[in-house]
Image (cartoon, rainbow, N blue to C red; front, side, top):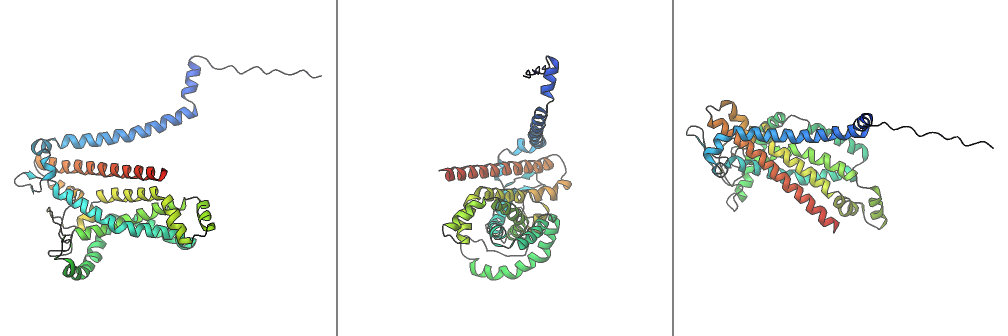
Length: 325
């Protein structure tokens, strides 16, 4: 009868060798690398906010919170108020969402659920190409194509609705306006909504579709009542990703918004955005107060972006909480 062979246990490294083996193990290195990347993002964000805060000190000390609620922007007299730029940024971004979200979500549903695979892949490729077009090219198209079209389309709308509250189509219309900027932004953000929403819809488990069809639902009922609600959080994420792009867009908006620092209820009026005023005037800003005021506009834009994204996150969390109930 063969005797059992006993294999002695491998000796574990002790002391310094044991510590080094734990530190330089694959899991520890991967964890340290991931932690470093996440920390680097926080450090860069903190440095960015710090630089904006330091270089806007002169304007903050002189104007305080009045800078955010006054509408006078006069570099000659040294009076600066960012309210027209905040207003223009919010109005054009909201208008772009109102135009792009129904179109984008509808196109994503068609490409993910209803279109033949070959057609869906071809159109998705073209949409992704559209998302890569430089913003200055979109601005040129806005000047050469969109504005002339609006000069033809807007007058009948103005005659029908311009004299009625809330007077969104009142006053003279010369082409460059908040309305034109909203349309240009809608063209720019629609590809993001379509691409991300399509991927989210395609990620819905196939079993859910088959179960709904087996219960007698039509293809459209399955899409609208099962697939879209399941992918709601992802679709909302695509919308707020597009909102972040709209808030920070510069060149395309600058070319069609009119660049006039005023507040008007009419979408046909010219306006200004926060990113546009920085791009237009920073190179010409003289003295100390003028550049400081422009940098404070950038700080306000950064804060506005953070606030809107935080509200978006809360909306997504609230939506998921309702779904869980």
